[in-house]
Amino acid sequence: MEDSIELKNKPVTSHVARMIGSADYDAPSKYKIVRQSQPYGTLSGDAGLLFIAYAADTKNFDFMLDRMTGDCEDRKSDDVMRFTKCVTGNYWYFPSVPEFDRLVGGGFIVFASQMVVLGCILQLGVLFTSYIVYSKYKMSYENILFADAYTVNGTPQKSRYVDSICPRHLCREDEILYGVGFGFDFYRKINPDFEHKRVEPFEYHERSGALGGDIFIHAKCNNYGKLFELTQAIINHLPPRSVDRFEDIYGWVYRDGRDLSGFIDGTMNPKDPDERAEVAINTYTGGSYGLVQKWIHDMDLLRSTPDNIKEKWIGRTIEHSFALHDKSITSHIARMIGSAERGKWPKFRIVRQSQPYGTLSGEAGLLFLAYAAEIKNFNFMLDRMTGDTEDRKIDDVMRFSHCVTGNYLYFPSQEELTRLFTIDKLEP
Image (tube, rainbow, N blue to C red; front, top):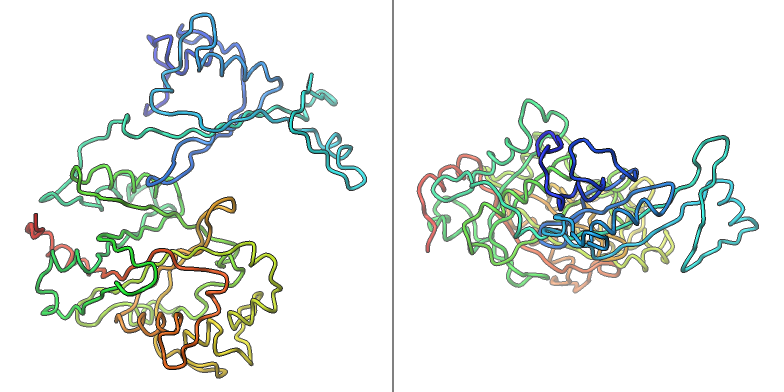
């Protein structure tokens, strides 16, 4: 597994044996393909392999797929089918550039539900066209074995997971940064005297999308695969039956730090590290309050709405994120800062860490995540978004997006986190 060295004694049902057509050691492949596959998905939903490959002839794929499914003389199925299954698949034909130009010549594109191609196009000895097979595999994680958890007093030590996945001496560019936050109900169980420690109550029960949640891990890394691996390690090393449900969402950078609506996100974020700490970290506890919300955008509405209308909804220009001189009191900026006046400074500030998420064929929007030194900063903004204020005005953001899940969280300082789990305070 570690070095991907072929086994000398492998069963005829092993994946390699099925694909090359023989269980003999170092046997040449009868048919070859060019693989371009990648993992996909989330641990809380579907996850597996998006298999994509190219070949000069469809018989290359036919041979391999028949040997995977047992549609051959020995009737043997590939052992890969023990832990995964194919849920979608298709053959495709990719024309060469000259052929494609002929197909779309005159502005007409030829679509066909079924296309039978008898051969490949060779020009000057170079292969310009290829066949492709596409399959989406869903992994069955219950059939995969995991190592024992690293725990102290039954509590997963996340830093050990990070170090094992991304050793510090190797991960200078793909370093994993993380924080652990708790929902209010869970936090007061592990720290009953929290108010004496000057941590204020942070219930979210009456807010939009209030589905609760006990533990939230905010992890950042330039490598999607490492974040998935981290999620996998944490979830599979928690005590049996300790997790009722969980959701893992992976955000990504859109253009130059924009929301899917096209606007730059976090324009008013404090830039100086000391200023960010002042805005986000509570002076007395050393911890930080967090707000996480999952927003789903109406992508069709955003696409069909003129930019000047969307700019009025937000109160900023799309291209440069300049505040509009004359903005509506219902514009997002006016609701957040507490005034529609030009040059007005926000009454309450937060540090945004939001990112877009999702797919265009499914749900897509913004995973809103922000930190503040006090919970009132969030209360002010959320009240003004939903019209729970004297003017009863609702944020224009609600025209194209809606919040489906949300929660307030408290992220203890490293010292408090260590103190909380030095002894087992969890109630049974």
